[in-house]
Length: 531
Ligand code: MSP
Image (cartoon, rainbow, N blue to C red; front, side, top):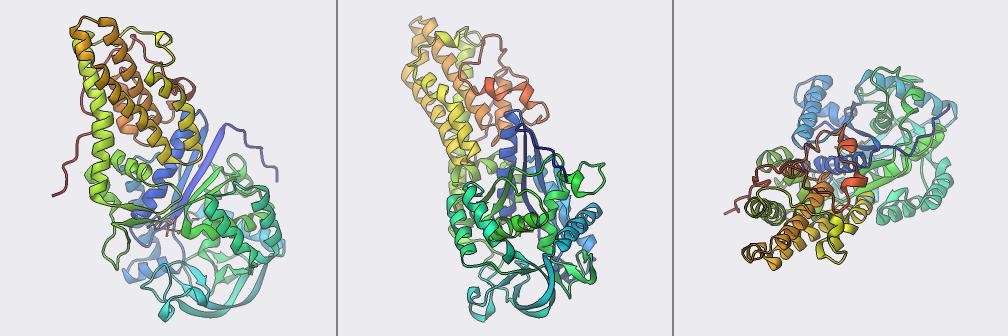
């Protein structure tokens, strides 16, 4: 198969394909927000971007849940899948593809892939004995289980004993190839701690894993033996490939892989690392296909310091949270407050405090009061100052001149909190600057030029901050840009790179007196504190 070499100008990334046994939870929202921020940032850079998300709809867990609800699996999946689509709309996620693993085109692709691996001799029939956690859809080692054979992740669920004939994938054959991959491409698995986890696991020796089930109907039949149903993970991982098909293309591997494969990034949570960093590359190697460029496993979210779960009754509903506080607020909190890759916590008081401090006070008030001063002291026009005339040692120019590069590096590294913090430093320095310079007294003293210089430098800093935060808070950034007289909407993703190219808009000093300022209005309303 001839894979067209991907040009540097494209960037494809995926979220996990979410199980539809339940409504979307905050964990799914977290990965998807992060993926959307990466996609938006890559679009600013002018890349052609493909953001893939979707739902994973086969397997025993979903079959059972549908049965419990008295629905046919397909009917149940249709309803549940729609709830993901509507949450992504609410959260302002601009995805390009939404793949459902029940899509008939997916079956054709899975079949072709299976047959390739089959003809390579990597699939054989064997006896599977072991403890299976239906909620994880994964066999567990007995030593991993808690008392009463309970799953360490789904602590209220017992693993089930299985002893049946299954087809196996020869994972053990790929041990050294995988080790070589991890060694030659140290960035393949990130962050470093997850990479070490995988490397250590593989070092202990890999065992073949079963890729078919006997007593599950809800899935694709094994192409060479329809009494068996394909294991949900074998089919789900291939969803990433089916998603790459152009809408009108024939469902063949060649078509699916021609433009966007290998994808640049699989974003996942830490619990599904082995599937992505071990099983998936081995499956691809077996089919003679290139492996993805990078896999990033983020941490888990807790609420008020506790593991979230239905049994604990402390789940955090992403729909209610977003409906209450807005998409930008939710996006900002999770990305600014938690180091991506580490576990992080949600606490509503902290949530409100962070948003009020950063978005309402530091950023929003700064814009508002500066625009009002421009109205009063400069007849409502951006002062006619050329950024070249502002000395190089101007405190805001110093920070602003390096910020674009610094934030670019942070986004590339998925260090979202660092990107946000770096921008916030400029915003905070601007607040300090305006307080120290006191343009209101400069104006009173008749120092018009000095007044204008202060206001220009601050407005320009707010503009730059809005631009660099636009992947995270696109609505607020658009609002700021509009008040600064730009007809730019950061949600217009198709045109964003031509309307506001990174090379130009990420530099301090872009604002000119040609811009006609809009009416000042608050960009983020202060949230009332909880009682
Ligand atoms: N269907 C599989 C993925 C197949 S990908 C080909 C799956 N689905 S899932 O819906 O159970 O989980 C999706 C994602 O949510 C995972 O990345 C998981 O890490 C993440 N999270 C689940 N609970 C979480 C938290 N409490 N916190 C953060 N993310 C968590 O696995």
